[in-house]
Length: 102
Image (cartoon, rainbow, N blue to C red):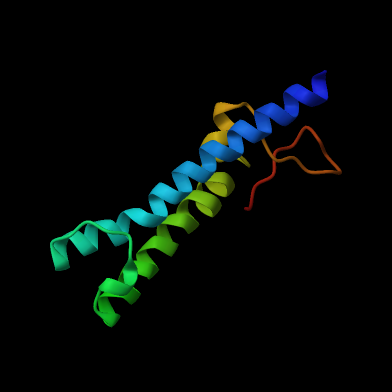
């Protein structure tokens, strides 16, 4: 029973992280498309080539912030979904020590 509840918690954490990641990944593209072509869309191919590259890089920057910076330096091995579900990454050799990059 404990294994099933752990899988449910991990699944919910995954869905929360997936939603936040999708939101952060599409936000720069949507905002830039609204400013440049006066239409809010997530279709990056409608943008000018140089502006599309900037939008894609901003999206990757936000995704890197969420999936790398937050778990490694802010929440010690937890994304927001894992923190919400009280899950974290741990070292295999030292289970009491959280995983982080120093």
